Amino acid sequence: METFEQKALDYYGEVIINKHLIHEAGFGARAIPTYVGEWILSNFADEGELTGASRQKIAAFLGRFLPTKGQKDEIKNRLLKMETVRLLDDYSVSINLHTGERSLRIPLLDINDAKVTGQIVDDNELLVTSGVWGIGDLFYVPPEGTRGKGAVWMRSLRPFQVSSVDLEYFRACRQHFTLEEWLDLMVSTIGFNPRSQTLVQKMVLITRIIPLAEPRANLVELAPKGTGKSFVYDNLSRYARVLAGGKITPPALFHNLATHTPGLITRYDAIVLDEVQSVHGDSAGELVAGLKVYLESGRYSRGKTMGTGEASFVMLGNTTMGEDKRPVYEEVGLFREIPNFLQETAFIDRIHGMIAGWEMARVTKDTPSTSLGFKGDFFSEILHALRGDAHYGEYVQQEMQLVDCKDLRDLKAITRLASGFLKLLFPDLKPSPEEFKNYCVRPAVALRQRIRDELHKMDPEYERVQIGVA
Image 1 (cartoon, rainbow, N blue to C red):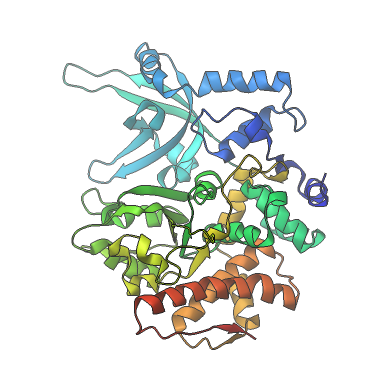
Image 2 (spheres, helix red, strand yellow; image 1 turned 30 degrees about the horizontal axis):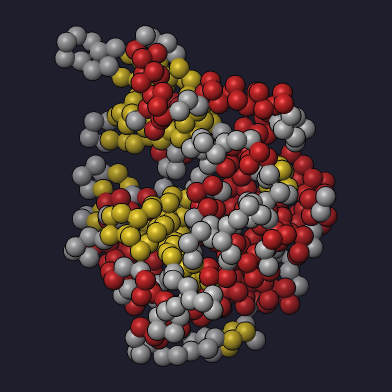
C-alpha cells in the first residue's frame, strides 16, 4: 500500500474506497455514473473487498432495482397491475407555473410527466436542479372516467448521496500529506492511476476539475481522441452537465420563455460542451452573444427575464496530432478545429484558460486507478462546498505577484484559476511560498498564456504578451 493510501485510511476512513473495485464489479453494462456504482459497492463490499458473497448481493440488488432499458414495458405492465415498483434511476423534476404542476422524469421508463408530491421535492431539492440518483417507490393511478389520464406517482425516494460533509475536517487533514501524496490521492479519486501519469499529466487532470470547485471558471481543452477528456465530468460529480454535440440553444442554456423555466447555467456547477467540433449554434447568433455576456459577468437576459448564474463553462474538443506528437495547427491557430461561430475573438477572450490536453496519453488498461481514493459522492459534495468559500480568492489576491500582466481579463482569469488550484491542492491554505508559486500561480499563468497566444494568432489587434511570475 502506498503511503498516501495508508494516510487516506487513517485520516478519512469511511469516505475512502478502492477505486479498482468499480472495474471489478461489472457495472460496465449499466448506464450509471461511477459515484453511484461506488455507493453500491460501499454498501455491499465486504471490508473493502469483492467476495463471492458480495458479488451475489450486488447482482441481486441490480437485478431488483436496476432493470435494463429493454425491460421498461415489463415494468410499466407491473405498474398497470397496481404493483408498487422500486427503481434506481436519475430522477429530476420540472416545474410548470402555468399549470402549477411538478413533472417527474423517469429516464429508464421514458416517462417525463410522472407525478411527485411537494414534500418529496422539498426533502430533495436537487430534484429541480441537477437531479438525484436514488431508489424511488413508484405506483400507478388509473384514469378517472373515459377522458381522464392515468399517471405514475412517486411515493418515496431514497437518494444516493451523502447528507452533509465536514469541510473543516477535510481541510484540517490535508496537513498530514505531502504535496506528492495529496496529488496522488486527488488523481486516484478522479479515477486515474497516479503511477502511470507524469507530473505534467497529473496537473492536467487536476485542472479538469477546477470548474467543479471554482465558480465561473471557463476552460477549453483540445486533446487527441481517447484521452478521457469528458470522463471526470460524466462520472465524478452530479453537479456537472455534459452536452455532447448537436444544437445548443439559448432557451436550454439560459431561460426558456415558453415554459418559464430557468436554463442549465442556473442549475449546475459546470456546463460542459463535449465534442465541441460538432456543436451547432443558432442562426441569429443569440447563443454566442448571450455567452459573451454570461462569461464576462455571470448575468444573462432573455426577453424581459434577467438572471445570474455561477456555472463554469467548459469546451472539450479533439485536435489533430502530428508525427511529433504536437497539434498540427499549433503554429497557425489551435481554434481552427472548433466551429466557426465559436471562433469570435471576443468570445475566446472570455475563456480563462486552455488545457494542453495533447500532453495526455490515450486511455489504456493501465490508466484506471488501482489505488484508494475519496468516494465519488463525498468528493462531489466537497467540490461543491468549496465553490462558496471566498478565502481562497482573497489569499491569491494578497500573495500572487505577476509580471507584465496589465490586461484586466488576464488578471481575473489567472486569479480565478490560481484560486481553483489552491482549493484542490492546498485546501488548508498552507502552501509554502514556493509551492503556491509553482503549483497554483505558474499553472494558472500557463493556462491563460495559451489563450493569449491563440488570440494573437487569430487577430493581430491582440498584441503578443508574455505574462511572468515574480
